Structures are given as structure tokens and as C-alpha cells.
Amino acid sequence: MATLKKQGRPKSEEKYHMILHAASCLFLKEGFANTSMDTVAKESGVSKQTVYSHFDSKDALFKAAITSKCQSYQLDTQQLVSSTANSLSLTECLIKVGSQFIRLLQDPETIAIFRVIIAEAVHSPHVATLFYQAGPEASLETLSSVIEQFGQGSADRHLARQLARDYCALLRGEFHTMMLCGIHAPLSDVEIEKHVVRAAEKIIVLFNHYTQK
Image 1 (spheres, helix red, strand yellow):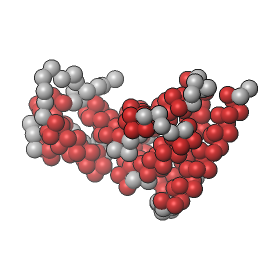
Image 2 (cartoon, rainbow, N blue to C red; image 1 turned 45 degrees about the horizontal axis):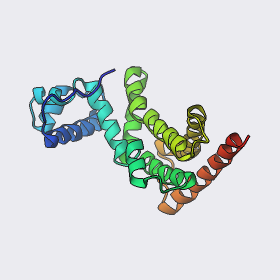
Image 3 (cartoon, one colour; image 1 turned 90 degrees about the vertical axis):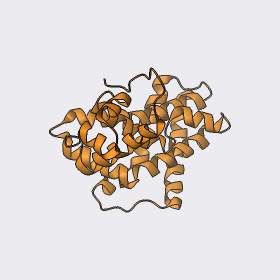
Image 4 (cartoon, rainbow, N blue to C red; image 1 turned 30 degrees about the horizontal axis):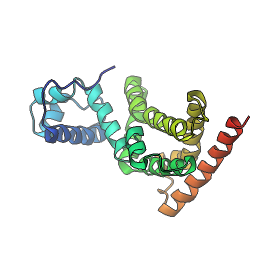
């Protein structure tokens, strides 16, 4: 699996973000197959060597772009735990994560990249795998970690993963598929809150059912 290269010496954080931004725009506009490291270098205003000094392959760059989008919505376990400092209950934490998850799902760029991946998946399942690993799977792992860590030791890793899958399914619901098809408008803040609270309440019922046996 391609990964970010380990930094032997400090690199320009500004150039890193310039490259990441340029690549994200190109992936959305041109798709994965039609985006090259040469075009990323040109769009970001740096040399191809500089691009490779930060990302050892196009795969690594693509995954970094997806990961960055998820982290911008705090869908990252370390960010989440640090920001809450264990001050929230499991229900409150699920609602916090769920709200950000919905906002990520209905972000215009997220919808656009979903459509790009769906279009390319038939001929390039590798791209779909990269997207799944950096996006949906990573978000699922965050939710699983939240349930395990904030469940006060009541949920083991297997149960936490199972409940995380159920929560993701409840959060996506029917509206996500409809949004991808362009026949459902994004949820308002009020609608997000109601949707997420209902989903979180159902997960808490399941959590209590499995942990109180």
C-alpha cells in the first residue's frame, strides 16, 4: 500500500498544502485516471520532484486528499478525543460525530468525488479501493474507536465495530443515495440534528442490549 514518504528533513508545509489542494481539484475535475503527477506539479506551481518528495505515488496523494477532507470535519479519532477530553457521554459523542459525518456526506466536493469514483470503479476497482480505505473505512474506524473508548469499557472491539457499521448505515439512510442521484437536497441543520439524534438513540438501545446481558 502506498504511503506518505517519511520526512528525513523538514519540508515546506505550504508546498505540501499547495500540492494537496491542486491534486484535490484535479481529481474532482479530471478523475483519478486522467490526473498525473505532472499535471499536479504544474497546477501547484512546483516541480515534479517536489511532488514526489511529499507523496511517493499518485495513490498516496489521492488517499491523502480523501483523508484531508475527512479530517476537515474532525472525523479523526485523535482529533475527536483530544477536543472532547472524555468530557462527553457516549450519546453526546455519537451525536457530535454523527453530525459531522452527515455534513461530510453532503459536502458538494464529497458528493462530486463519490460520483467520480462510481464512474471509474467499473474500469478501475483499484481507485474505488483507495477511496474506500481513506474515506468510508477510515470514518468507520473513527466511529468504532469512539464507541469503544467512550463506552467505558463495556464494548469490546468486535462489538464496537458492529455498532459503528449499524450507525453508519442509519446515518446514510435513504437520503444519501438520493443525494448522489441528485434528487434530494442537503439536510438543513435542524434536519441533521433530528436525523442524527434518532440514529444515535437507536445505537444506544443496541449498545445497552449487548452490554447488559
